[in-house]
Length: 319
Image (cartoon, rainbow, N blue to C red; front, side, top):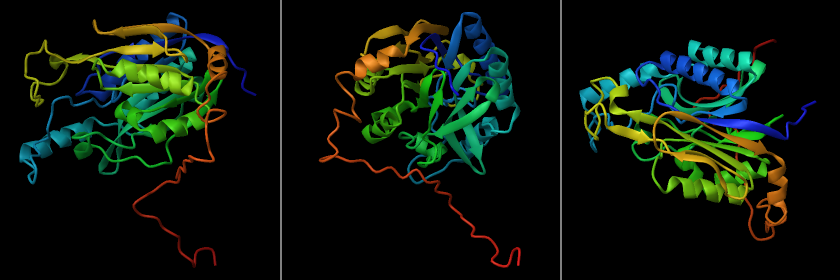
C-alpha cells in the first residue's frame, strides 16, 4: 500500500552535463542527488539529455541532400556517449537514489541498436529504475540524430509523492500529449528541457494551470567550454559563451512560481510541495473531468509498442 506524503520538498537541478563523458555526468548527478537529499528534498528533476549530452549548435554536417564525412564522425562520437539502460551510468543513479531514498527524473540519450532516443528515466529510491519516456517528436534538427518514441512510453507513476510523469521540451507544446498526461491524474508534471528562452516559463505556468498540477522544469546552464574542442558549434568557440542559460523553475497548480526562473548559473532550486493544492485547483477546473465535453471532443491514444520487426514465433515450437 502506497502511503502518500502530502507535503515535502522538491528540487530541480540546473546543472551542466559533461557532454563527452556520460559516466562523469552520472557521477555528477549522483552527487547532486546526495546534495538535494541533504537539504531535505524527496524528489529531484534533471534537464533533458543530461546523460549523453545535448549537442547545442551542432549540425552534424548535413546540408539538404548531403551527409559530410565529418558529420558522420560527429554522430559516431555522440553515439558512443549515449547510454545503455543496463550500463554503469544507470547503475550509478540507481545507487544514489537507493542510498538517499529520493525519486529522480533524469534526461538521457538512450542507445537502442543503431538508433538514439532522447529519453527520460524514472528512479524510485530502492526500487531503482522503474520506467522511461522516449521523446515522441524531436524538434527540427534533432530529428537527424534521434529516433521517434511510440505511445508505449508515456507513463505516470503512482508514488507516495504524487502521480509523477514527464514530457520533454517541445513535446509540451503538443496539446493531445498533455491531455493524455492529465487523463492519468498527473500531479507532478516534470518538464526536462533545452529551451532557455523567455517564452518557456509562461508555457510552464499555462500547463500548471491547465492540468492543475505542479510543474518542475529543468534546463542546463552550460558554457561552450564544457564541450570538447572539436565540437562544432554555430554559436562560436569562446569557452565562456553560454550555450544554455538555465531558466529552471517550479510552478504550483494555480500557476504561481515557487522557485526560479534562474539564469545565473548552476544551482539547485527547491520548493515545498503541498499535494492538497492539486485538489484545491481542481475545484473549478478539471480538464479531463467536469470541465471536459466528451460529447463534443474526444481523444484516442494508441499506447501499443510499435517495433519495426515483430516475430510470431515458430509454429512448430513445443510440438
